[in-house]
Image 1 (cartoon, rainbow, N blue to C red):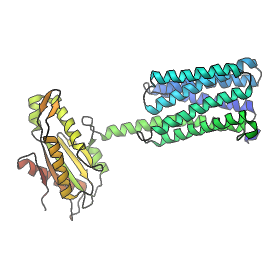
Image 2: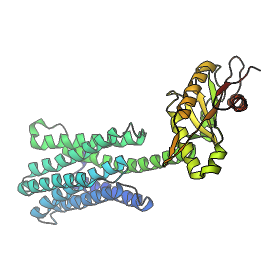
Image 3: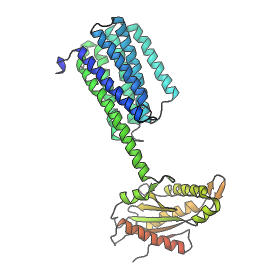
Image 4: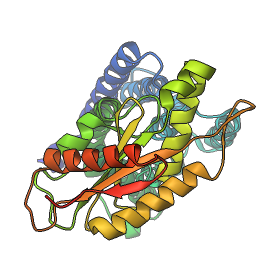
Length: 379
């Protein structure tokens, strides 16, 4: 089937792929006003649309060779520079800084200068065009893959793979036009594959934006906005409904927190909550899960810790909070915390029961002088 396609038809299909991408990115810009990336991507695909239109007109002898040969490659160079800038902004989640933009513009300007010199040489012109495509797409793949650890989304990997394949195909085309005796890909077939990949780029840019938005909404739904730790909803929906006998729970309560609010104001109280959450987070193990239980209370799930290990961790937390006053904008506030620890042991119980056991242990800590760790008594 691919062998039956002529170059003019492929160019027309290529222009359609750019138009679809352009419309997709315009929609993204309209629906996400402050989203970085769509404007540059839309401008890049618009430039590619103009370039492919000129190339098509040249194939159909509608415009002079000098116009379409130079115009198509210049718009192509500009388009690929903009596409790379758009992919980088989309990947980083922020607008590209001035230094990077200037560098991309300088590379594009240098390519345009070269294009003017080689415009009437089909092989050199095609090599330059595809060389710019290689740089843009492989560069886009690099920034997308580089951001995986910070944002592990499957759509990011898919978009990186698609742009990487596009770059490799463009590299193969560049090699084929410069060294036809060692051609590794049919040019019509290469254009056809790139067309399919253009559609895929537009699709997965949309998917990445949607998946990122969904992830942000889920994060907001599961996070306490004041302290930045997980909330009670996340804790009871995510932790095991029936903990193992060695799993432990810890309930923590800031001592005399109401007095801090009454004496210094709620702004200071908020600062205390934030600092306490920070110190707790720095004192627990990597696999432990901290959440704000409500008010001035926090809860921790400690998998496999058992009562004794959990109590040791509790003492470490208590000491980390009591040892240094909390700095609230120049005002230093002494803070202590009471902690209750529980593990189901041989008695099988659900997560809510385990939390209630830790709550009873916390009550003991408060009645026995506060600023201490107590474990749940055997039933």
